Image 1: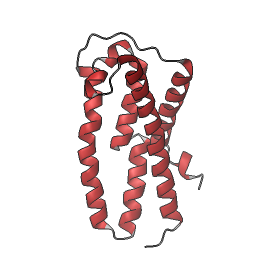
Image 2: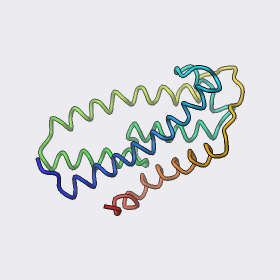
Image 3: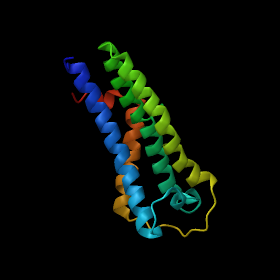
Image 4: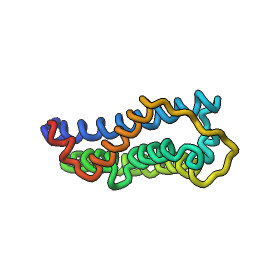
Length: 155
């Protein structure tokens, strides 16, 4: 299997989408862990009530990692699956889709904890530079999801 320009573009878009979503996810995880002392799912319970901005950007990240439409993660996965199918790698795509379906369960656990589980918590302090990076990353995630040409034109 040769990597052509189409495959390189797919890998670039997927890696970009995954990297941006990971920046948000790990940034939020660091904030929650530092201020709550824990990084398990329960640490995110009720986050949307005290920190709606953090919950929103983390939701965008989780949706992108899950490959939900209108996010960069969906575009990245679509490009990767399309490139693999052009090379007749059907088994690989089936395994990737199964893996994506399983991962949705874990990503949505965080979203459910933030919005639908109650917890007595204090508001997390979010430094300005975190807000800038997380907000910009979330914006780029949505921008790529709506207009994939924004990133795919770089290659």
